[in-house]
Image (cartoon, rainbow, N blue to C red; front, side, top):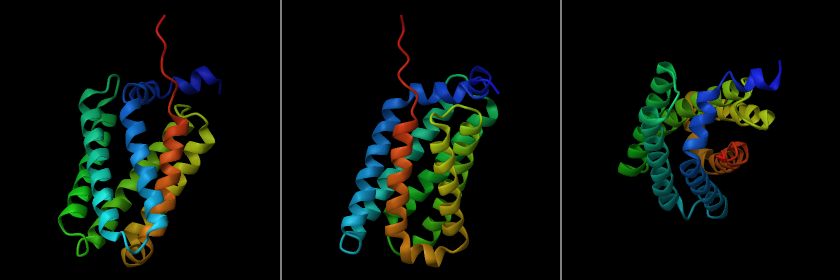
Length: 188
């Protein structure tokens, strides 16, 4: 398959990434900071990490909801998927901020669903040529799906190892988002 054919399969996603580049960079940097903090202070900063993670989820979810309504060239299905994923992520953020400990299982389930969905989107975009380098999108997507299934099917295990596992995955996903963003489109 030629490069022009593969990149034309997901032109709306590439356009979405270009339009919301600054927001994606900001959310990714917040994800990197949160991931590093979780590795440096795993126990002592549980409340802080939960609050920052809740804020990250709220920001990420709101971005997705706004993108579902404002991004040019998205199909109806892409708008629905982006909006529904945004709602799920906002709900996870609200739960994280409202009751830090008793909602950990619910948060694990919602994060699992969100990561599985995000992994599917990353793999689809990489297969269609919308993410460059494609292998990084594939790896990010596969890791997101694996992390999602761990959170979804083993929420008790996810709660016990959440800080360390989430920190590494959040760092990797944030870095891969930063590294796979399309370049700014320069108008002549």
